[in-house]
Amino acid sequence: MSLSDPITATTRTTMTRLRERARTDRADLHAVLDAGLVCHIGLVRDGAPVVLPTGYGRIDDTVYVHGSTGAGWLRIADGAPICLTVTHVDGIVYARSVFHHSMNYRSAVVHGSARLVTDAAEEIAALRAIVEQLSPGSWEHAREPDRRELSATAVFALDLGEASVKVRSGPPGDDDADIAAGGRWAGVLPVHTVFGVPESDPTLPPGDGVPTHVAERRPGQRTPPSETDHGNG
Amino acid sequence: MSLSDPITATTRTTMTRLRERARTDRADLHAVLDAGLVCHIGLVRDGAPVVLPTGYGRIDDTVYVHGSTGAGWLRIADGAPICLTVTHVDGIVYARSVFHHSMNYRSAVVHGSARLVTDAAEEIAALRAIVEQLSPGSWEHAREPDRRELSATAVFALDLGEASVKVRSGPPGDDDADIAAGGRWAGVLPVHTVFGVPESDPTLPPGDGVPTHVAERRPGQRTPPSETDHGNG
Image (tube, chains in turn red, purple):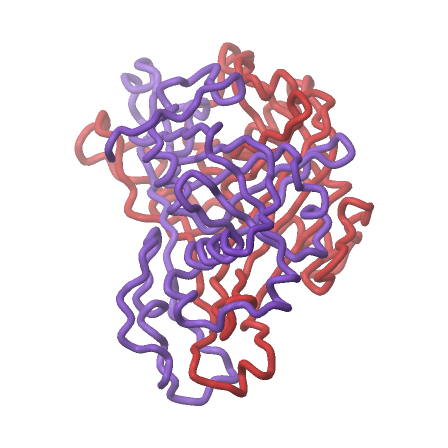
């Protein structure tokens, strides 16, 4: 990945330890965000934290989330400080010592204030980004939202200006004495996210094929596969 | 799963919408927690939320997390309100309409105050639970923590008294008009977490076998496989 603007370091995003796990490249941040399905959003409600999983999408240096206008957390989010975290577990790190057991992972933590999206064009673009992150190719394949559906949906924007990325990879970091002692296995058990066989909706007519953007979807893929079957069964 | 004590419903954990997705069975809560590798912990720092991924373990109705005594978030956690969330993505829900796109998932959200564990026996039990959640069988196989390692580790407890579980499963919930219109695929693309081939540490002597608790580990498995190779290879 190419070097570009470094991610701003603030008190919140400057690591106090394990600095070697911190990345400051904006392309790293985008890559971690783009590879995910869910983020965990933190809000403060009555002085206490609330952490909720939700889908999201990214356009340039803005990340978007959405929800029903009736959802409690969306009613308190506008202008409020929020934290958005995306984590990928890449492996279980087995060490000779319990102490050095760990995980290989990539995580992005974004701090900022939520901004309610009110511009109609930005709202549509944001919803498209959210849907394409969840299901690449669906925006073209599925029926776009109508006015009633849009009015039932709230979209929030979060600027990526204050963010940090942490990555751990590679073998365990055992103490020399434990390595020399021998007799215990150490290594990494890789963890992968995979897709199973698509399950067509039971109300579909028999014989309706699974479109390419679903059948050929691969994990981490952001750009949808080229569409040859456009759902005309 | 058997019915047991219902999870306490409070203002924070009573769903304001989509009540059919809420589960109130304590066994459901335990199952969602036990199947995970990472949780996302929310804290409030200087009035703003912070959401961090970390490993965890459960003993009965207490969940434990740990970290270095030098980690910033651990220094502010004792007695503070925290939120601990575990999420499993089970499928991508493709609908005829963009609006009804969704995810199948299981999530648990726990609210409470973090309690610094100071009792030595509880700390060891908690660390064992955390290690066994990450890597079943490792506590028996690996070297247990010594006094120096224990003093460098802080463990926090969170009571499961205030928690909620949400589950979505099954096909999309399209509008009748979209189903009748035809011409668009709908269904579920299952999402699974799988383990790859174990990668032995490069410092191990050639020919050292991968022990059973790693080689035969399956996702979601909490009890370690019976150990036949205890790493003396």
